[in-house]
Image (cartoon, rainbow, N blue to C red):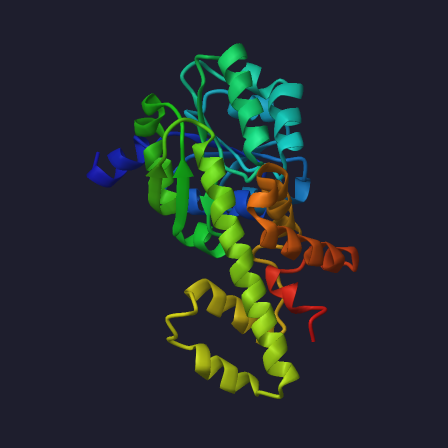
Length: 294
Protein backbone atom coordinates (compact mmCIF):
# COMPACT_ATOMS: atom_id res chain seq x y z
CA UNK A 1 0.00 0.00 0.00
CA UNK A 2 1.36 3.43 -0.89
CA UNK A 3 1.46 6.36 1.54
CA UNK A 4 -1.45 8.18 -0.11
CA UNK A 5 -3.69 5.12 0.13
CA UNK A 6 -2.81 4.72 3.80
CA UNK A 7 -3.52 8.39 4.50
CA UNK A 8 -6.93 8.17 2.81
CA UNK A 9 -7.90 5.01 4.68
CA UNK A 10 -6.97 6.61 8.01
CA UNK A 11 -9.35 9.54 7.54
CA UNK A 12 -12.42 9.35 9.78
CA UNK A 13 -15.76 8.61 8.20
CA UNK A 14 -17.97 11.71 8.34
CA UNK A 15 -21.74 12.09 8.41
CA UNK A 16 -23.28 15.44 7.49
CA UNK A 17 -26.80 16.20 8.65
CA UNK A 18 -28.20 19.13 6.68
CA UNK A 19 -27.36 19.43 2.97
CA UNK A 20 -28.17 23.08 2.45
CA UNK A 21 -25.73 25.62 1.02
CA UNK A 22 -23.02 25.09 3.64
CA UNK A 23 -23.58 21.41 4.35
CA UNK A 24 -23.40 20.56 0.65
CA UNK A 25 -20.30 22.71 0.12
CA UNK A 26 -18.53 21.04 3.04
CA UNK A 27 -19.57 17.58 1.82
CA UNK A 28 -18.11 18.26 -1.63
CA UNK A 29 -14.89 19.58 -0.10
CA UNK A 30 -14.48 16.50 2.12
CA UNK A 31 -15.20 14.12 -0.76
CA UNK A 32 -12.58 15.91 -2.82
CA UNK A 33 -10.09 15.44 0.02
CA UNK A 34 -10.68 11.68 0.11
CA UNK A 35 -13.10 11.38 3.03
CA UNK A 36 -15.87 8.80 3.12
CA UNK A 37 -18.96 11.01 3.49
CA UNK A 38 -22.55 10.20 4.32
CA UNK A 39 -25.26 12.83 4.09
CA UNK A 40 -28.85 13.10 5.27
CA UNK A 41 -31.41 15.80 4.57
CA UNK A 42 -35.17 16.14 4.18
CA UNK A 43 -34.63 17.40 0.63
CA UNK A 44 -34.35 14.57 -1.86
CA UNK A 45 -33.03 17.00 -4.46
CA UNK A 46 -30.13 18.05 -2.20
CA UNK A 47 -29.25 14.41 -1.56
CA UNK A 48 -29.38 13.49 -5.24
CA UNK A 49 -26.95 16.32 -5.98
CA UNK A 50 -24.49 15.00 -3.40
CA UNK A 51 -24.96 11.44 -4.60
CA UNK A 52 -23.48 12.47 -7.96
CA UNK A 53 -20.33 13.61 -6.13
CA UNK A 54 -19.91 10.24 -4.42
CA UNK A 55 -21.56 10.75 -1.04
CA UNK A 56 -23.56 7.94 0.52
CA UNK A 57 -26.99 9.53 1.00
CA UNK A 58 -29.67 8.44 3.45
CA UNK A 59 -33.10 9.84 4.27
CA UNK A 60 -33.00 8.57 7.88
CA UNK A 61 -30.54 10.64 9.97
CA UNK A 62 -30.43 7.99 12.69
CA UNK A 63 -29.16 5.44 10.20
CA UNK A 64 -26.74 7.97 8.74
CA UNK A 65 -24.88 8.64 12.00
CA UNK A 66 -24.28 5.00 12.94
CA UNK A 67 -20.69 3.95 12.41
CA UNK A 68 -19.28 7.35 11.49
CA UNK A 69 -16.50 8.73 13.65
CA UNK A 70 -17.51 12.37 13.16
CA UNK A 71 -21.00 13.82 12.76
CA UNK A 72 -21.34 17.39 11.47
CA UNK A 73 -24.68 19.16 11.80
CA UNK A 74 -25.42 22.06 9.45
CA UNK A 75 -29.03 22.66 10.44
CA UNK A 76 -30.55 26.13 10.00
CA UNK A 77 -31.92 26.97 13.45
CA UNK A 78 -31.77 25.85 17.07
CA UNK A 79 -35.35 24.57 16.85
CA UNK A 80 -34.52 22.37 13.87
CA UNK A 81 -31.31 21.09 15.48
CA UNK A 82 -33.14 20.23 18.71
CA UNK A 83 -35.97 18.53 16.83
CA UNK A 84 -33.64 16.43 14.66
CA UNK A 85 -31.05 15.50 17.28
CA UNK A 86 -33.32 15.07 20.31
CA UNK A 87 -36.92 14.91 19.07
CA UNK A 88 -36.15 12.44 16.29
CA UNK A 89 -33.73 10.42 18.42
CA UNK A 90 -30.53 11.00 16.44
CA UNK A 91 -28.49 11.73 19.58
CA UNK A 92 -29.71 8.47 21.11
CA UNK A 93 -28.67 6.61 17.94
CA UNK A 94 -25.07 7.84 18.07
CA UNK A 95 -22.24 5.48 19.00
CA UNK A 96 -20.16 5.88 22.17
CA UNK A 97 -17.04 7.92 21.44
CA UNK A 98 -18.46 9.66 18.38
CA UNK A 99 -17.73 13.36 17.94
CA UNK A 100 -20.73 15.54 17.19
CA UNK A 101 -19.64 18.92 15.81
CA UNK A 102 -22.54 21.39 15.69
CA UNK A 103 -21.45 23.83 12.97
CA UNK A 104 -24.54 25.85 12.11
CA UNK A 105 -25.17 29.25 13.67
CA UNK A 106 -27.95 28.47 16.15
CA UNK A 107 -27.19 30.94 18.94
CA UNK A 108 -26.09 30.81 22.54
CA UNK A 109 -29.24 29.38 24.13
CA UNK A 110 -29.73 26.69 21.48
CA UNK A 111 -26.13 25.58 21.86
CA UNK A 112 -26.52 25.45 25.64
CA UNK A 113 -29.59 23.22 25.31
CA UNK A 114 -27.81 20.80 22.98
CA UNK A 115 -24.71 20.62 25.21
CA UNK A 116 -26.92 19.96 28.22
CA UNK A 117 -28.80 17.21 26.38
CA UNK A 118 -25.52 15.48 25.54
CA UNK A 119 -24.33 15.79 29.13
CA UNK A 120 -27.50 14.29 30.60
CA UNK A 121 -28.52 11.78 27.92
CA UNK A 122 -25.30 10.73 26.18
CA UNK A 123 -22.20 11.74 28.15
CA UNK A 124 -20.17 9.24 26.10
CA UNK A 125 -20.68 11.39 22.97
CA UNK A 126 -18.18 14.25 22.50
CA UNK A 127 -20.06 17.47 21.73
CA UNK A 128 -18.12 20.21 19.93
CA UNK A 129 -19.62 23.65 19.35
CA UNK A 130 -17.95 24.69 16.08
CA UNK A 131 -19.62 27.42 14.02
CA UNK A 132 -17.56 28.87 11.20
CA UNK A 133 -16.59 32.21 9.79
CA UNK A 134 -17.06 32.03 6.03
CA UNK A 135 -19.67 31.20 3.43
CA UNK A 136 -20.11 28.81 0.49
CA UNK A 137 -17.00 29.69 -1.54
CA UNK A 138 -14.56 29.44 1.43
CA UNK A 139 -16.22 26.13 2.37
CA UNK A 140 -15.68 24.74 -1.11
CA UNK A 141 -12.02 25.80 -1.13
CA UNK A 142 -11.17 24.83 2.47
CA UNK A 143 -10.77 28.41 3.66
CA UNK A 144 -13.22 28.54 6.58
CA UNK A 145 -12.20 29.75 10.03
CA UNK A 146 -13.57 27.26 12.56
CA UNK A 147 -14.51 28.54 16.01
CA UNK A 148 -14.29 25.30 17.96
CA UNK A 149 -15.08 24.74 21.62
CA UNK A 150 -15.61 21.56 23.53
CA UNK A 151 -13.84 18.60 25.18
CA UNK A 152 -10.11 18.18 24.66
CA UNK A 153 -10.59 14.50 23.81
CA UNK A 154 -12.48 15.46 20.65
CA UNK A 155 -9.66 17.50 19.16
CA UNK A 156 -7.49 14.74 17.72
CA UNK A 157 -10.54 12.99 16.22
CA UNK A 158 -12.09 15.98 14.49
CA UNK A 159 -8.94 17.94 13.57
CA UNK A 160 -8.40 16.13 10.22
CA UNK A 161 -11.93 17.12 9.20
CA UNK A 162 -11.47 20.73 10.32
CA UNK A 163 -8.09 20.88 8.55
CA UNK A 164 -9.75 19.86 5.27
CA UNK A 165 -12.52 22.46 5.36
CA UNK A 166 -10.73 25.31 7.09
CA UNK A 167 -7.43 27.13 6.88
CA UNK A 168 -7.53 27.88 10.60
CA UNK A 169 -9.19 26.34 13.65
CA UNK A 170 -9.41 28.24 16.93
CA UNK A 171 -10.02 26.07 20.00
CA UNK A 172 -11.65 28.50 22.41
CA UNK A 173 -12.52 26.55 25.56
CA UNK A 174 -15.72 24.97 26.82
CA UNK A 175 -18.59 24.25 24.44
CA UNK A 176 -20.60 27.42 23.88
CA UNK A 177 -17.60 29.72 23.57
CA UNK A 178 -17.50 29.18 19.81
CA UNK A 179 -21.13 30.26 19.38
CA UNK A 180 -20.56 33.42 21.39
CA UNK A 181 -17.55 34.32 19.25
CA UNK A 182 -19.53 33.55 16.08
CA UNK A 183 -22.17 36.12 17.02
CA UNK A 184 -19.45 38.70 17.68
CA UNK A 185 -17.97 38.11 14.22
CA UNK A 186 -21.35 38.09 12.49
CA UNK A 187 -22.19 41.43 14.06
CA UNK A 188 -18.97 42.79 12.57
CA UNK A 189 -19.91 41.18 9.25
CA UNK A 190 -23.31 42.88 9.25
CA UNK A 191 -21.65 46.25 9.80
CA UNK A 192 -19.39 45.66 6.78
CA UNK A 193 -22.33 44.65 4.58
CA UNK A 194 -24.34 47.69 5.62
CA UNK A 195 -21.30 49.95 5.14
CA UNK A 196 -20.90 48.72 1.57
CA UNK A 197 -24.63 49.11 0.92
CA UNK A 198 -24.80 52.67 2.24
CA UNK A 199 -21.57 53.68 0.48
CA UNK A 200 -23.05 52.39 -2.79
CA UNK A 201 -26.27 54.32 -2.19
CA UNK A 202 -24.41 57.53 -1.34
CA UNK A 203 -22.21 57.27 -4.43
CA UNK A 204 -25.30 56.78 -6.60
CA UNK A 205 -27.12 59.67 -4.90
CA UNK A 206 -24.17 62.00 -5.51
CA UNK A 207 -23.77 60.76 -9.09
CA UNK A 208 -20.38 59.15 -8.63
CA UNK A 209 -19.72 56.51 -11.28
CA UNK A 210 -19.37 52.87 -10.20
CA UNK A 211 -15.83 52.66 -11.56
CA UNK A 212 -14.83 55.77 -9.60
CA UNK A 213 -16.13 54.22 -6.37
CA UNK A 214 -14.35 50.91 -7.07
CA UNK A 215 -11.11 52.74 -7.83
CA UNK A 216 -11.37 54.72 -4.59
CA UNK A 217 -11.83 51.65 -2.37
CA UNK A 218 -9.36 49.32 -4.14
CA UNK A 219 -6.39 48.81 -1.86
CA UNK A 220 -7.84 51.09 0.80
CA UNK A 221 -6.90 50.11 4.38
CA UNK A 222 -10.45 51.06 5.34
CA UNK A 223 -12.05 48.31 3.23
CA UNK A 224 -11.73 44.59 3.97
CA UNK A 225 -11.55 42.01 1.20
CA UNK A 226 -15.02 40.79 2.23
CA UNK A 227 -16.57 44.27 2.07
CA UNK A 228 -14.91 44.87 -1.30
CA UNK A 229 -16.34 41.61 -2.66
CA UNK A 230 -19.84 42.55 -1.51
CA UNK A 231 -19.46 46.03 -2.96
CA UNK A 232 -18.58 44.41 -6.31
CA UNK A 233 -21.76 42.30 -6.16
CA UNK A 234 -23.82 45.35 -5.26
CA UNK A 235 -22.46 47.39 -8.17
CA UNK A 236 -23.00 44.54 -10.62
CA UNK A 237 -26.50 43.86 -9.21
CA UNK A 238 -25.50 40.23 -8.61
CA UNK A 239 -27.66 38.87 -5.81
CA UNK A 240 -27.05 35.13 -6.31
CA UNK A 241 -26.72 33.86 -2.78
CA UNK A 242 -23.41 32.92 -1.24
CA UNK A 243 -24.83 33.91 2.16
CA UNK A 244 -28.48 34.92 2.07
CA UNK A 245 -29.93 38.05 3.61
CA UNK A 246 -32.43 35.84 5.43
CA UNK A 247 -29.69 33.87 7.14
CA UNK A 248 -27.79 37.05 7.97
CA UNK A 249 -30.90 38.46 9.62
CA UNK A 250 -31.35 35.21 11.54
CA UNK A 251 -27.87 35.71 12.98
CA UNK A 252 -28.51 39.37 13.86
CA UNK A 253 -31.74 38.34 15.57
CA UNK A 254 -29.75 35.91 17.71
CA UNK A 255 -27.46 38.82 18.63
CA UNK A 256 -30.47 40.98 19.55
CA UNK A 257 -31.92 38.24 21.74
CA UNK A 258 -28.67 37.52 23.56
CA UNK A 259 -27.03 40.96 23.73
CA UNK A 260 -29.87 43.44 24.12
CA UNK A 261 -28.55 46.99 24.72
CA UNK A 262 -24.93 45.92 24.15
CA UNK A 263 -25.45 45.98 20.35
CA UNK A 264 -27.80 48.87 19.47
CA UNK A 265 -26.52 49.37 15.90
CA UNK A 266 -26.94 45.67 15.16
CA UNK A 267 -30.58 46.02 16.16
CA UNK A 268 -31.05 48.99 13.83
CA UNK A 269 -29.54 47.09 10.88
CA UNK A 270 -31.70 44.06 11.69
CA UNK A 271 -34.84 46.19 11.61
CA UNK A 272 -34.02 47.59 8.16
CA UNK A 273 -33.21 44.13 6.81
CA UNK A 274 -36.53 42.80 8.14
CA UNK A 275 -38.24 45.30 5.90
CA UNK A 276 -36.30 44.06 2.87
CA UNK A 277 -37.11 40.45 3.67
CA UNK A 278 -40.79 41.32 4.06
CA UNK A 279 -40.57 42.53 0.46
CA UNK A 280 -39.15 39.18 -0.70
CA UNK A 281 -35.37 39.63 -0.49
CA UNK A 282 -34.70 36.86 2.05
CA UNK A 283 -33.32 34.36 -0.46
CA UNK A 284 -31.01 36.87 -2.11
CA UNK A 285 -27.37 37.36 -1.20
CA UNK A 286 -26.55 39.81 1.59
CA UNK A 287 -25.49 42.16 -1.22
CA UNK A 288 -29.23 42.83 -1.54
CA UNK A 289 -28.85 45.01 1.55
CA UNK A 290 -28.33 47.82 -0.97
CA UNK A 291 -32.05 47.65 -1.82
CA UNK A 292 -34.26 50.34 -0.39
CA UNK A 293 -31.44 52.87 -0.06
CA UNK A 294 -31.21 54.28 -3.56
